[in-house]
Length: 406
Image 1 (tube, rainbow, N blue to C red):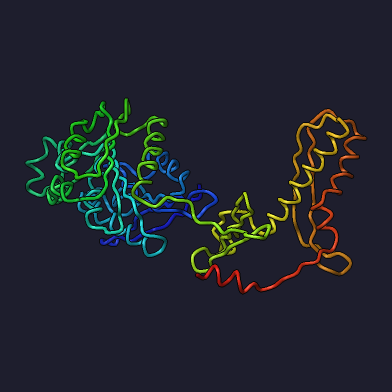
Image 2 (cartoon, helix red, strand yellow):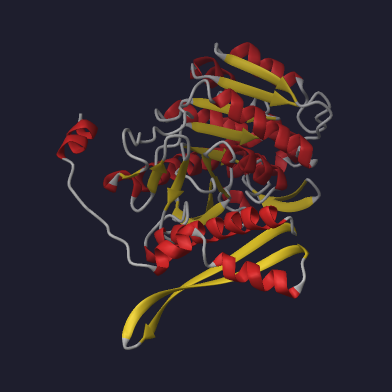
């Protein structure tokens, strides 16, 4: 997983601490937004585990701290429900402008309610997932029992939520009374997955029943058996992430990217300059890999660089050559590690490419056998090709260009 950390300015001018977790070795197929639970942060272990499961399916996950929480600016009093919805819309618009429009919104606990309301405002959101979400926003005000009279006069009050103390005001409470969540659910008309634990100690499973009753099809419910509200067990959050990825594939495009066909050739490498920067998709008849440049030179680092691929070919060929030789000799060679470093060096007044190989042999081998294998390593076909001069012929194939442009 590769993570970009950025700052996004919300409507009130506060910085929202945002992380984008990218899938390894590939361009994201889709982006999703994750709204964390009330008083939590985007660093909650469950959020990260669900994100990892989605990364494994080629999905980039955008997680951020709501105003006044975690590393974001503002105070907790600024983190009322309306502000949460506004933050989701702002982050969605930023990701749409600078990356790709998110297609899925996931919300945990009260974050699920915010996700539903935000999804009703955002055309690019195709589906919604809620986890342990209340069916009514006023559910959260139970935390302020005993302070309602004081808050009704707009005075500040200290409240305890989840064992932590927060200062809130009457204005904060009013923010939870501006939305009719049941009506929003009824009018959402987007695919929704409702996930809830039957033993949730914070938000009872009856809330999931109410959301399901109000939502229109397509709608799905999954019971998170024996999970607590915060999904603190890794297996619970990982399970949720796997299910979300599978469910979402019915409503957002998660199909593998189309890869080029080498046709009559041995190999083809395809680069789309407008969409992929340096990311190059390489295919033979039966296999495919990705080449890229590191971020330090402007790439996305989704794959090995061209010279790393050359080094990889040399290393792989070396190991295979030693295997064949040792088997023919019936020597006890069990494993081969071939380490390669590529550099430019001045030799005889000229700058030349140097590939330095370091080979680790695993097995019962005497010094003479090891020395012989060192010599044989220089006889692998790729080694010999790199060491000798090669002839490279280049042509512009108008026929193939026209075919790809159709």
